[in-house]
View: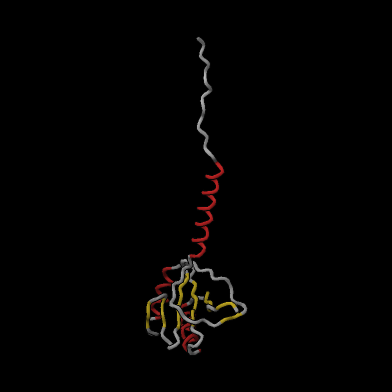
Length: 135
């Protein structure tokens, strides 16, 4: 009696479904990470401008918000005008290349926004931007 050897069957890993799952996870990760935006300031109704640029915020960027009533917010902390110079000086000394974004409410008095910008420039921070919405 002769026995024939059976060929050994090797397990196969199907690669195509694995690639589909990996690409789905990658696309999900990219979409979620793009939707995460860092907003340090309070929510105000900023005016719109046709020259509104991209919102590029780094770790060395400070957001100063001016509310409709003239209240000043240092990122999300409410401060008064007397505290602003000291906080700006501390921020400037802590960062090599400090940048300030002034987030002024569209209905805020012009004098409040100008006063904040003036204090920023008095401290010596030269990179100042105004936050607007694209039209």
